[in-house]
Figure 1 (cartoon, rainbow, N blue to C red):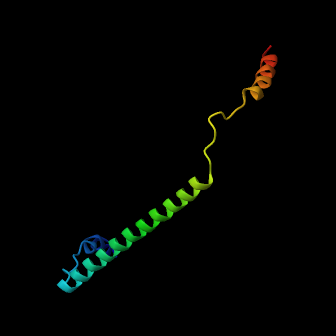
Figure 2: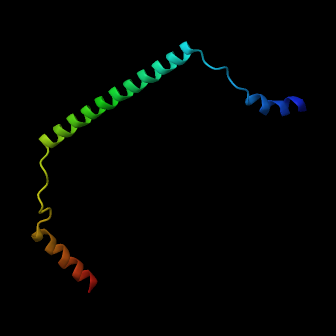
Figure 3: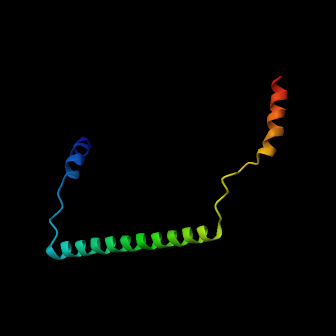
Length: 85
C-alpha cells in the first residue's frame, strides 16, 4: 500500500506519446474552426448590441439639463431651515 502511494505521483508525470501528423492536423483544424466560430459569435453579438443601442437612441429622448424646477426646491429648503432652528 505504501509503495503504491509513493509510486502514484511518479506515474502522474508519465508522458503521452507524440501525436501523429494526422492527429496534429485534425487538432489544428479543430482549433481553427473554434476560433472562426468564436469570431463569428463575437461579430453577431456586436451587431445585436448595436441594433439595441440604435433602437434605444431612436425611441428615447435625452433628459433636459434642467432636471429640478427651482420653485419646487424653495419650499423644501425653507422647511429644512425651520427644522434646523
